[in-house]
Amino acid sequence: MPSNPSRASGPADVSRLPRIVSRRSALGRMLAAALIASPVDWTQPSSAAPPDATQLTVNMRVPHDGQVLRLRHVTKDDQSVVITAIASDPAGRLIAAAGDDLAIRLIDAETMEVVRTVTDDATHHHRDVIRTLAFDDSGHRLVSSGNDGCIVIRHSAADFAATQHIDGAPALTCVRFHPSGRQMAAVGFDEEVFLIGKPTAQTKLRCGCRDLRSIAFSPDGKVMAVGGRVGDVHLFSTDPVKANGDHSLHRGRIRSMAFRRGSDSMVSVGEDGDVVVFDVNDRKIVRRVHVGNCRLFCVTMLDSRIAAAGGSDNRIHLIDTDAGELIGHLAGHRGTISDVAQAGQWLYSGSYDATIRRWDLHSLQESVPQLAGREDRIVERPNRLDR
Image 1: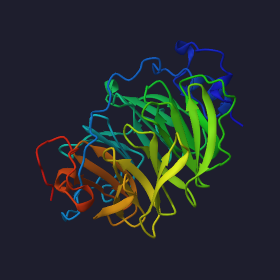
Image 2 (image 1 turned 45 degrees about the vertical axis):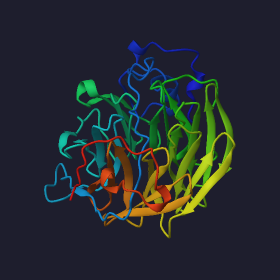
Image 3 (image 1 turned 90 degrees about the vertical axis):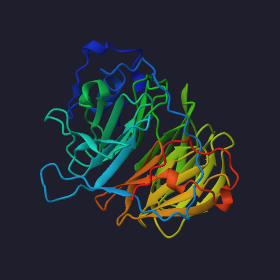
Image 4 (image 1 turned 90 degrees about the horizontal axis):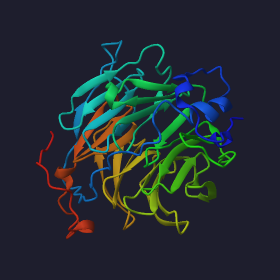
């Protein structure tokens, strides 16, 4: 089994580490060296915090099917790309989208134009489906990973070209940056949680499940939650790193999780069609909403209260996590929704129907009965309604 970064006695000499760790190297050696002391400067915290975008009022009575973007395959001009993962930078300016052609597109969130298509060279590239994308809180680094077990880190200073390629892990399903930017965590088809960038006193972090699908860090970075096949959330404290118990949330796989903004509670979605609000301090389920006979694959918080969850019924469901109510849905996709991400006034969604859709949150922010009279409205911006 893989060794854990905790076996290192202290920071390694970064200058002596290779930029590429061969798949032929033992995974334990990779975790003990390359992951802890990467060429990326993990000692510097993120330089920018996410903007204050905690206010939104939603009106589902506004008919709207979103603006559509189709991405062309990099080698097959007659084919559109199936979207496997998307992510938004914290400033809401860029959307990163991964497709089944193994390329990553950077999209201007305001104009919806592709500003760069990243196709890496033979040394730094993915060889199989990209399952996960994430920006750090500064927006300067973008990480991708997937079925090939490679973790590729890109930097804005290099036009998001690959600056490090870590190889040798099992197939990975989710990689996330710690809010400090000094650490990452990765999970996949292995029971171990791989910590990247920071030594830990814990010999191994295990979840007792070899099918892990999701990671979420609390806003203050003190809690890491991991979810997978059996429907349990596995909680860990991050400083010091230690296991804090398992809690049953879903009847089946947990596919995605997100912490509510400024809160100690998290939202999880699963293949049982449930949206669960769980308080990590009190260790109890606060709300459970069943959205229907579908599997849910992704969730993001639109503000401190409203969650958007997408799944196999081709819809994005909007949930009031305070009231525990389904307040509506966004329809337009013709295939399973693989991922969702908010970028300022926009909600982006990617789908197996080979489209990305952009939903204008301003066109949805008139009051509905559940939210009438709220004063915590989204920050005012030009009201553009995409048709």
